[in-house]
Amino acid sequence: MRKQPSAVIDQTEPAIHRVLEAASRKGVALEIRFLPVGTRNPGQVAAVVEAELGQIVKSVVFVSPRPAARLIPIVCLTSGCNEIDLALLAAVTGEFAIRAATDREVLELTGCAIDAAPPFGYGPEVRILMDQDLCQYQWIWAATGTQTAVFRVAPRTLRALANAVVAPIAAVRWMSSASGAVAPGLTFGAG
Image (tube, rainbow, N blue to C red; front, top):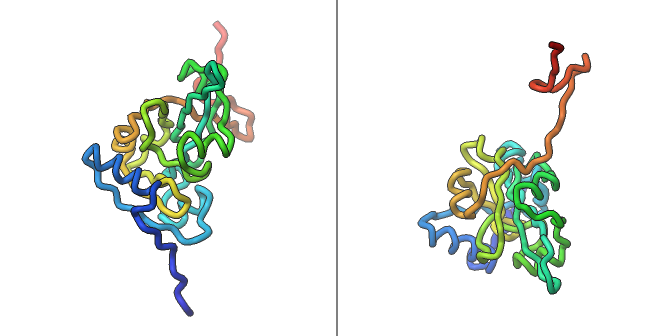
């Protein structure tokens, strides 16, 4: 059986180069891992790099409007198995008109496609928040600004590279057992 070649991309590609340069300025050398063509979603990336879905960093871009049609970008680094809770995000940022950025806005504000935004390498006007669930892992994997390359990094190193604020921004999933028990810590007693 013939081995299929994986995607080979020049590390001087602008998005990858920007991420490598931003890390280098902080004294961190990143090792880029190229993904096979067609690897697109967090589940596929996790399978390729042999990691849990939660170890995959999704960089989700939100915007908060300002006067004169200006938008303030907020990049949320979230675990691959989590979704962002807009109410929590608004509370953490103090931005109450926050909304998800459109594909076009993501490209204009970050220079990258919506599904390939890196976790850092932006100007000072971009606020970056990091899902606290990423901190439970020894290693996590993040995009380089392209859909075909990722890098592995320790959560605390990613936080430092991104100047990110770690916060509870993930939507809470309430679980109940078949017996209908309430989530731990939410029971009320009489008396």
